[in-house]
Length: 211
Image (cartoon, rainbow, N blue to C red):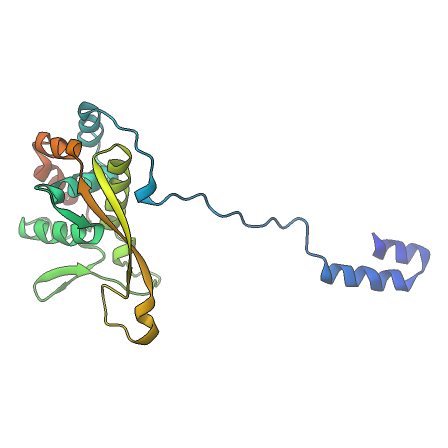
């Protein structure tokens, strides 16, 4: 408005003032970024469902979330307490030994080192599939959220330093990463005992997913 007025009234000083204001005054149209209201897995509210409801939701629909939940339950029987990463490594290697299809997506994001599959971790690159962008990791994250929210697992969150994949030096060892340790609740143990075809469910799912 000042610039337009300077032309109409033939006052160049108004044009100069308008230019200064344009430089020093932030645009009102730009909204400040609001922090995302994201809840960590360990703090998800629990809304328990019955055993029958859980089996109906998990067994009757094939999805990454459901197979992730199945893999978690399968890995945590007998009182085990494992991280999501440990579950991923266990399941991938167990399925390799069960002769799952070699083209299965379950091996995406992993590399075979000295006869064992390990997570492939690298800087994000176009066309490069790493552990944290793999179907297995996504399945376990979604499965963890479902089982935590429905009261079938306990999730303990902790902070660890350094890297689980490579040796670090100097200040690199101060790098922090969140680690989630999972354990079945009493209800989760009952679910594990009741889900009779757990092994077959997992194997069939990954045999149907080709990379």
